[in-house]
Image 1 (cartoon, rainbow, N blue to C red):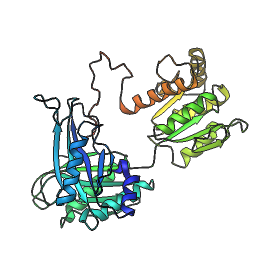
Image 2 (cartoon, helix red, strand yellow):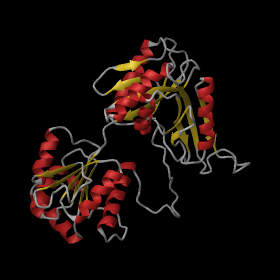
Image 3 (tube, helix red, strand yellow):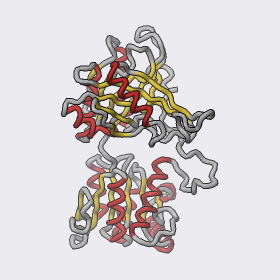
Length: 387
C-alpha cells in the first residue's frame, strides 16, 4: 500500500472513500511481492497493481464490493489448470490479497491516513496490519514512526499492540517489508496471526564520483531506479547543474573528503551504492581506500583491466586488504557489450540490481533458476523469538 502512498494520500486529503487491495503472501512465480497494492475509489478510479495484470479485474471488483458492504476479506489467486482463461496467475504463482475498505469515518482510516501522509512526505514509517487471524482483527493496523512510538491498535489487546509494534520497528530499521507470524498466546487473541509489515524509508543513496558523460547517463538511470543521486567531482567547471540536471545534489569536493564527511554524518548506510567513475589514480585510490572499509551495499569502479590491476596494486600499497579488495566491482558493470554512455550506465545499473536482489546476472533463457525468488517472508515462531 505504501508503494502508492502519494496518490492515496491525495485521495485522503480530498475526502474520497476507497478500498485498498494489498498483496500479503506469495508463492511460486508471483509477479509482485507483499506490500504491492491496488486501490479503487467510490467513483471507480483505480491506481496501483497487485499482479502486473493477471488478476487486476477480479481484484477491482472485490474492492468495489468491499466499499459496498464494508467487509475486509482475504482472497487467494492462483493458476487454473482446467481453464487457462479463468481468473488466475498464468505465470503459475499464487498470491493472497487483503482487501480493506477505507471509507471516511472507518476504524482503519485514521491509522492508514497517517501512514500514507508520512510515506508521501518521505518520512520513515511502518504500518502493520493483521493479514490472517480472527475476523474481528482482520485489517486492523498499527503505525510505527521513525522517531519512536506507535499509533492505532488491535482492539483491546495492548500486549499484542506492543509486540507487533516492536517487531515492526525492527523491520523499519532494516527498511524491510514482509510477513510476521506471531505464535499463539491466549492472553492476546487465542490463535496464530499473520501480520503484514510495510516499511517506507527515505530512498537509498547513489553517489556517483566523476563528472563525465558516463556519469550523466548513470545519474539518469539511478533516478529511474528510485535512488537519491549525488554527483561529486573536485572540478567545478564539470560538476554543474547544466550538465547533470537530474541529480538531486551536485557536490564540488575531493571525492574522498566528501565521502568521509558523509560517513561521519551517518548518512552512508547499508543501502548506499558508490560508483567511482573518476578514472584517475589521484582520486580513485584515496576514495576507494575509504569506500571499501564502509558497510555500503555496492562499490564499483570504472576502468580497463589494465587500469584495474594498476589500481589494485596502488590500493594494496596503502594497506587495503585482500578481503576489502574482494568487495570492489571492477571493471564496473555486467558484460552487455555496452559502448555508449547509456548502455554502460545500464550495465552498471544491472549489476547494482543483481547485487541488491541476489541475482546471478545470467540470461533467464534456458536457465533453471526462479524468476521471482521468494525473499519476503520473516517467520517469528514465538513472540519475541526468530525461528
